[in-house]
Image 1 (tube, rainbow, N blue to C red):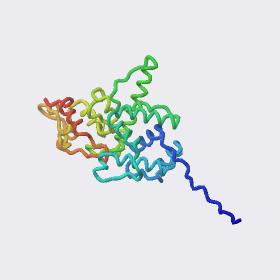
Image 2: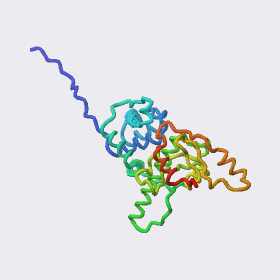
Image 3: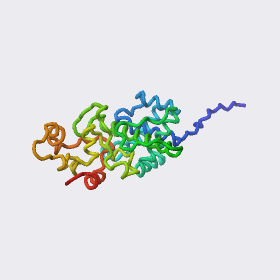
Image 4: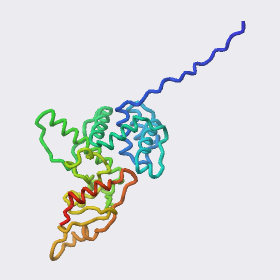
Amino acid sequence: MARVPATRNSTKPPRIGWTRPQLLVAFRLYCQLPFGKLDSRNPEIGALARLIGRTPSAVSMKACNFASLDPAHRARNVKGLGKVSAADRRLWAEFTQDSEALAAQAEAAYEQFTGVGPPPPADDDDVEPTHPTGPTEVERIIRTRRVQGFFRATVFNCYDSRCALTGLAVPALLNASHIIPWSDGPTRRADPRNGLCLNVLHDRAFDRGLVTFDEEWRLVISPQLRVRGETPALLHQTMLDLEGTQLRLPARFQPDAAAMGFHRERVFKAG
């Protein structure tokens, strides 16, 4: 009797779906790495892949899928390298609707994978410091630090760690500024589209409503800075002479025009 040749088992192993924590840290990576550095050969991609049990190619592809959902990249017809999953779209929608909640989850997931604690408060935190009085207050402070850390890192990344107004590239002299203040926009506290990277002087002036930006993203100076009589030269050099200077917009997570409209109407001291 003729022998029947053995056939190889062609059944492929089942694909293992991405878990929620893995998606969160991949999204975090997308927000905090320049778009041109999302290649699988990037050491940071490789390090995260090892941390979460994925291949560098898979992490890179997932980050690029998130890029394809970014309106700024869609406008330039940037496409993801792989098929964007329903979970990817849901996560992006969550971030759009409530950036604070998603950012807090992403930072918490990253801390679980790495074993590190929440970041210390940054110098530019625009939240009143408090002394924790119980477990609930401690958790609130930890959440705030997570959200602030996510926001700062993402805004700095979007603007290449340069002041969007002057081009200053000294991180120690830069702040991540909220357009709609922290207290007025709870769901937008971690939204980079509600942020600008400004040097510490213009950040303070922007926060206090002494400067704003018009519909064309040009600097507008409050009349309160136009002191009567002799105006100090420093005020001219740092503020008045820059009036009309156009803000440098980032390649992704561009500032939201509606948020800036809120700043002009509710924060800026026009009189």
